[in-house]
Image 1 (cartoon, rainbow over the protein chains, first blue to last red):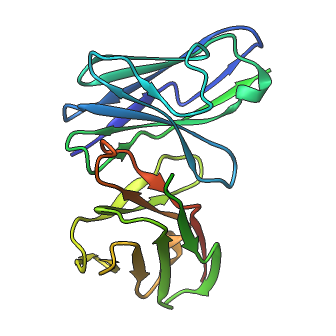
Image 2 (image 1 turned 60 degrees about the vertical axis):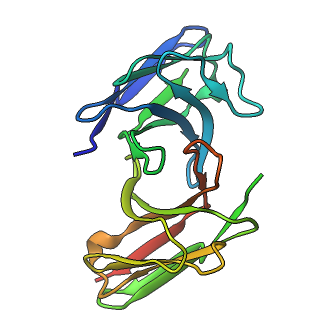
Length: 114
Length: 112
């Protein structure tokens, strides 16, 4: 149980284009989903928290117009990186929580912007 | 905001040895979580702790929620090569709506 999927697992895009990453909870309903960014050999950096049907709450320093988050249903959240630039290249990981205690992570999406 | 200090930063051990790592916080948490991350993958939840003093095992892994609620440790007994990876602690404070603060991770290398 508690399986979270992410799609795509990796993506290469050109500078200036937008990329959408999907996060799905496959066998439970996620009241809350979280989006993280991780640089090589570093810890997870929380970008935003999203609850189904409401606007995401962004962490300080994260541009909400740059990283658009939509939590359309209890099993799906999407992160869109708009007008991507090379500095946006990173490993993006989502997590989903049903109980507000344990978070279950997706396998991550490797974004490379050329 | 809350900060977690996780130590050691890295460990190189021989297969069969026991391992211990810990996290300390400047503030009180009401939940401690331990995760393992393999390269290129998302973290996997190993153990969740909800009460001060709680000691929980998952196979060869044992974790404890410190009495002061400001620390937690994870022990791995009889390490094997597949234990290699990065271990993260995470804490949740009251009123944080499920948000976790993560430690910087402990990178474990196991030599056969």
